[in-house]
Image 1 (tube, rainbow, N blue to C red):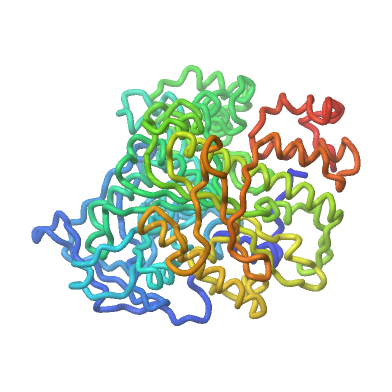
Image 2: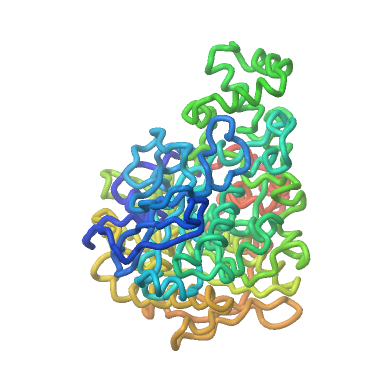
Length: 619
């Protein structure tokens, strides 16, 4: 059920665009320069301020694009903490997006980028600001909630330019800031040679997370010039962006820079430093620093095979290894990584427990200690059919005769697998962290997104194949469905009334949470969103987001644990024998990491030992 490359069909591309790329293409007019969108911010210029010239947005809003918040992390600054950018110019034109950070083109990444082609530039630490329309005098006296968006993409692909915050800003009277941060090996790389003689932050492996923290520092110092309140900042993100948000909750260096947090379809995960550094034969990651360095030496012709490469590395001084890492082109560096089988992205160890930027303890342990984390209100949730976005591209599960003609090979097995994996995502991305937060006295709100009103295409039931898949909630949160012709396969005139009403509700709740830390009734007459209670206290409830046809926006009670996921597989009559049930359990463990792989043989009453974990039971 793995080892699959996402096919470049129109439908898959449309799904992935909907999942993460909110580009501004479409029927709305192109942004134009706006004389009233000039703001002043403190700077090192002789006058003490810099004028930043922006644009009129597509929703009546104003926006400032490609604003630099840190210096280019290139050359000797690669694999170091970001250095804040201090503007020295009198005028800055902020009317074009800054470069994406180096990555391979991917459907989850930068819009229209050729798949697998290297794109981006190391000079990429920019942010984009979206605000309601106001003149410069109004901006000086206005203090609106600030929502800082951290994009997803596995921490290896993505671009802040893909998310249009204009409607959310204009309609809900908030300031939206979308940030770029270093990705892949340039954003997360752990090796002793990079720690030799370095400061504690420069020695960290979490450069991408440090970039996000630096962007929050920029917001604290400058967002008031754009009408934002530096004392009311919400960080929100999806997928890897949500994992980064959860990491910010436990990162000491981020303390005080934000006041609320929203994690959409995240997961509480971390990489142990040894796992990120040691050779695979010694228990390290398949793309550990040791493995990558050996591949670089072989690719450069300096070593003939892995054994000679390792012998060479053992004799190389730290300064020489660090020099090699800093001088290798991003293209060569990324090419040294084996790809994730499910997502066709480089598998880069990230969010590494280094004891400086991130604690050495497991994130769930830290979230459960009120004194050890940021004590701020948190909203988090998952989508009901998270994993269908990925399973949809698996030819073992979906048969394609043409790019637009497709059928499920075995609908019962497909849905059973998707439900089990998506339940495990709810455990790791919502209920487990929510439970830890609530038990330690935190204020936390949980949701599940259920929208699944995609159309049939040539007889293919996209509502069943994709449903409430990973990332589908993002256009609803931003209220921005104008994604171009390809996305119209999913977002049609027929489903427009329901999804528009649902988007209004979600924007209202998200903005109400940003304003006060309480989503309440979404600023209107919607159901009251109650906190997720501690098990020993009030009932554990979450909010379901769906259209009226799907049951509406409503609270439900309940919490899932890993044992519930396993028990549901055990009794799922769509799975016809132990082999099929073990295949599903294998995928749940392999993907979710909620259980160690050595727990697998004991499952199904011990039957799973007959179907080895390292061998996919299905071809």
